Length: 185
Image: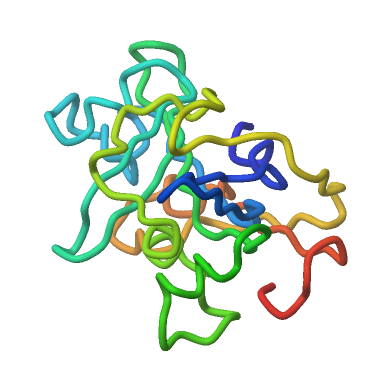
């Protein structure tokens, strides 16, 4: 599953000519129109159109009128599946991340999907961008390997109004490893 495979990858954001990055430590899968927790459950719309595109593209959407969320499209072209990147462990350019999360404790800089988009200035302008292109201002590259025993699987969170079996699908992946500093985990 792509959500599991993204754990350990490095999410890189280049801004103001500098690179900031973090290791993906939490992700959550959404699988097509049949998945009642997925934005595609009602079919293709202007908001979710990027989900129907090529795998490896960003699906960035605005929620609750205040937060941007970053997903990596994971289905074949035309099949709306994506992985929400829920948390990263800051790994490069702490000063740039800190500036974007001023007044926030280090352990809370990127420990949620809206927090990481604030830390790495990710907005709707990145919707549809190629996350596999290292020349892009936002991309994913190799990072570290998390062994299976370092990964916890749980049902997705924040979808409490979703019917079964979708509510209980174990499609949330969380890395717990000594390879990254435990204060964020």
